[in-house]
Image (cartoon, rainbow, N blue to C red; front, top):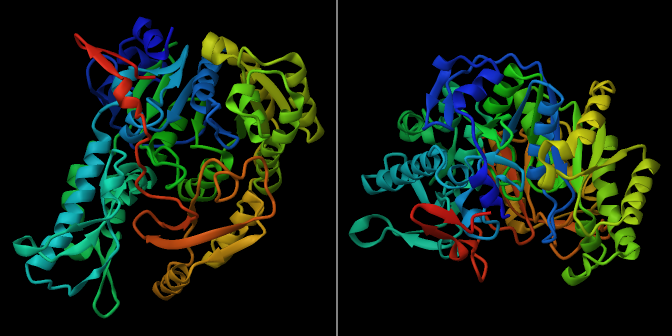
Length: 548
């Protein structure tokens, strides 16, 4: 059966029953039908063990990080642990673009699958509306006399849309009787600063403060103009007053899951909201969360940015890999992935080794490797990975969560629990906040990616000087980079070493509280593939198919 057919056949519990598993009072629930609810609770007492699930660099062969995360949560439930998942919401861009869905797979899914993948509880729409309200305020302010003396050529806050639409990357707005004509570009909502703010805010008051601190433009004297100068923060926060509340759903096996926020990891910070994570850690004894794409992106940003802002740290890191994906990192073509071949696996495994060593040697965290099973895997290939991981003191555990759900991750859950005893007291960051922005970028590039160094464009150099002038050098850095490689070149697979990271642009996200360095050919508005996933979807008498 397909993922959506499995989801359709599942018998979900009323969301009140799911809340009871966490001892969440019914009066704290705001219902969206029988199977979804927002949790209106901002009283946090994080005490749970936190498990971070990350992965090798993704390939078209698939890694199944979200699927493993959900299966691991269900495995803890089967072991009678009080567990809660803390995951991101899918973006409509990838759903209708390449992925076709992002709620796990097989018998390891969160549900209701269609709702979560589509409009869900409207959080993304609220963020999009609030973002574009600020853009409307900016252009209206200029049209109405421009009291703040905004330089229309130095507006740095862009419109957004939760779809892949390359035609909106560079457009012209205004002109004629419609205002001042100027260049504009849309970002996808998942990469917007407002998405990051929602995910990094501690409550609605912090949300409003961060919105007010958004750098929107410079005036003609070169001085910064913020959202609060436009008096935009109150109305924008009003639009987000429901979106800031985490969403409670369930796995197909009935484990609780808080699904909230959805920044991409390649062009944003790649983690679910701090509010949802802390709420899960308040109500559960074990929390399983994930960070997007490979450990060089999502895990690095989780550890260096989210953990700093939230004041949390994971107890264990799980790194997901598949034999098929490692073969692809070793040069195998798609048609060769199902054929037993140790040569490709040996060439590709340095990618896994690099990510594992980063977690151990840079962040000093306990690590376990989850090998997501495919039917074509052989005992010889599995043994090879186990042996290579044993050389660096790490256990590699086979998972079969797509076919078996939580039952297929019991071994992984037990390995994770063993590592709880190791502790995270030596946890450290890849850089210090007192480092310059250049030093932070350099340390991420050399320590985490394995680069020889960093090369800056002239534009980026000027922007770095501007950051220094405005006093934002003490912020964390989020690097926008291809997810497919440790480098900024998507074609350099495995674990390349002889490369430099090329930084083309550096943006201040003062409201979110970090600086974004854009590398290589990374775009903040993706495009659709030649055959978008959406054109294969169908709806017949209200029943959806083709969503996976």
